[in-house]
Image 1 (spheres, rainbow, N blue to C red):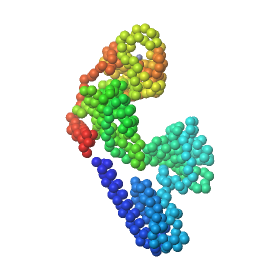
Image 2 (image 1 turned 135 degrees about the horizontal axis):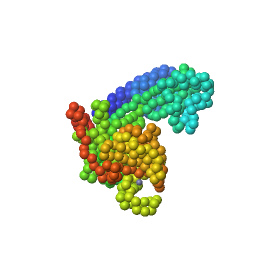
Image 3 (image 1 turned 90 degrees about the horizontal axis):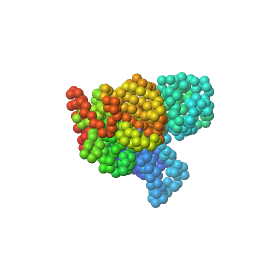
Image 4 (image 1 turned 120 degrees about the vertical axis):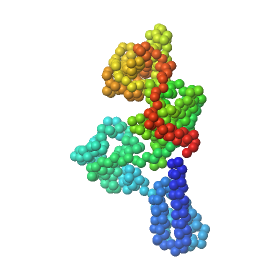
Amino acid sequence: MESSHYRKALRKQTQRLKTKIKGTLKTLVARLPLLSGILQNRFVRGLFLSAYQSRYALSGLTLTAVMLVLGIRNLDQHSPIQASLAGNQDVTLDAFPIQIPHLRYGFALDTFQVTEGSIQPNEFLGSLLQEHGLSSVEIQELVQNAEGIFDIKSLRTGKPYTFLAKAGKEKPDYFIYEPNVYVYYVFDLNGKSVKRVERPVQKKWKTALGKIETSLWNAMTEQGLDYALAAKMEDALQWSVDFHHLQKGDRFQLLYEQEYINGRPVGIGQVYVAHYQTGDNEFYSIWYDENKELQGYYDLEGRPMNKGFLKAPVKFSRISSRFNPSRLHPILKRRRPHLGTDYAAPYGTPIMAVGNGVVVEARYSRGGGNMIKIKHNETYSTRYLHMQKFASGIRAGTTVKQGQIIGYVGSTGLATGPHVHFEFLKNGHAVDHTKLSFPPPDPLPESELPKFFELRDQYMKILNGGS
Ligand SMILES: [Zn+2]
């Protein structure tokens, strides 16, 4: 719906521009014999007027302008107008300044000396500004004025910055820091002020569908889909679909928001519907946020998806060893039951609590290394072993929420490589959590359901090709 509006508006704009350019050309040709010095002004003014009307059409316009010039040069060679033009020594068509100012961060960059760089390891705002000629008194004033707007400790290695100096000046006038595509900070080095500028984000609804032939990654990238979409799909379905067991032939379908800045895709916004089909099982996860307190994913009947437990404590990992009561231990080389599931993942991968609960143990043990035990309720507890380290603030007694990061993958204790050994305890006994199923939770309250169903039906219509 939104996109057709957009297209219509764009078509209109383009049509208007075409008419304008045609008009300009007609006027130009009609007046060619009479042209003197005013030709240049008139032509340029006409072009610039059109140019500023639509930034979408800028590139097209530049092209048209170039073609126009070429066309006139052609005319110059083959038409009777040639004589009158040729006699006019001061008209040089090649010299038309058809240049659109290069705008960035709200500045016409062409009018500045531009110095670009990226934050180096252990580089600080102070040292960077000092290198560019600011005194420590000036820096202090700037830092003071930045308080509440920009945290100078938030400078990150690798992020781009730009210094702008007016022509002929040694000291820069502006410093611009860009932590991500959505926002940048402009430091006025003369006025010693700082402002935060958010780039306007355009959002468009998109649908995607795919079939797993080899991997989810392939299914996504083969269609030119952003792989970030896979993570968002996993977020939406993490309670229902075990992303470690994707099968060949599985299908997915998504309704989501694509974010654009200046027409360039920059990221994935909200996923509204995620649909996953594996064998005879089908899962729908629908985003509902009409009521902020109940915001989250729900199934087709309005039952919350996030009740129960996550299917796995780490994303993008693989199961390296399954629950097996009579396994041959890889280090001890003798039969020893494996009472958990091992998820192999790179060092430092975040480990999440699979459900709400309270940390009852966070300690080091010789076999399990850094381990955490969470009590979820009277029946269920979970354990996470071999962590590199605990997440900050996690200790015995800490209340944790489902999906909260509690630590990071490591190989402390008896472990051959980085992985998390995950145990699911039912009434104190380890069980294979990949085989567990839980009773369905209650749906949204009666007062919310009509709104939910209305949204659901709207989304499904879009997802299935309607509008
Ligand atoms: Zn294990």
